[in-house]
Image 1 (spheres, rainbow, N blue to C red):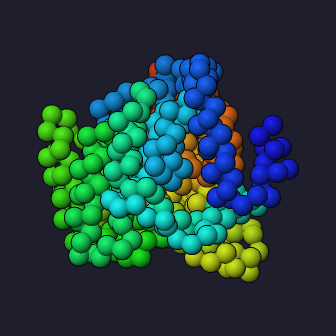
Image 2: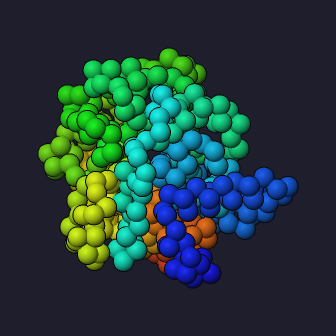
Image 3: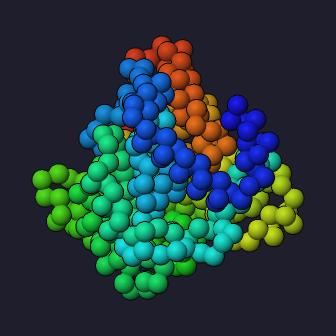
Length: 367
């Protein structure tokens, strides 16, 4: 039904407006008495073989919602009720900012992809923190980025400001240095710049949350050279980082079914969805070969189905995330993916999906 509605109506509406209206309707729906509980009962993953432990928590399923959908922590409860095992809010910046001029989000339906140059539009870390105080039970991560007006020299202070506000309220924190839509942000992925940034954010988390170690992750771009991926993997091990999210959107435009002139006319932005699948998998495999089981890997990029999620898990991902797959798949998509993943675990004669993590990898940490 959703796919029919999408092709008949939704694809003809502006992408950002469709997102805003549909998300508002979902939030309004779960406010009605009993609706959130009913949705969770119908859609939440319940198969015991899907339970997975990550970042000191047991999650009901490995599929989560990537950052970008709920930038301001306005609908965490509604999204968890749809059946995601966890939700990542953001990207949040220390200061409120409007993002880039509209239009700034575009569909490429023939490629099952999106192009966005949102530019970290959000209400700021203080507003997100106020909402997280009242969030419902469930695993929620917070993704933080650099305020656009802040210079590179001031970036560490900007990130630590957000970390201090959000770390006490989030189950894990992600440093996003990989969006292509904030000028200069990706330069921070260089190991010599990333080391002091992550060290400072780690210190900020420990300062404001002295009784609980907040897991810290970094999210990287798919466009990095292999040597840079290796350098980040080594840095993660050096700093005792809890996880790496691979990957963000890409600036590449190769191999698309959509007419090249039409794609070029959309302008700059990050490409997400199916075209990112192969590169995101390659980055994940390279990271697994470097870090083994010592750093938790979260896979994102081109995950459209249980087959895609299963492939990433067997390649070494403990958790998987999606955004574009959810946009095209509709509200029943998380339940469907989790249900089919459970079937794959049973077909492989495994007791738990955790036994599949890294089964296809070749690192020395896999038994």
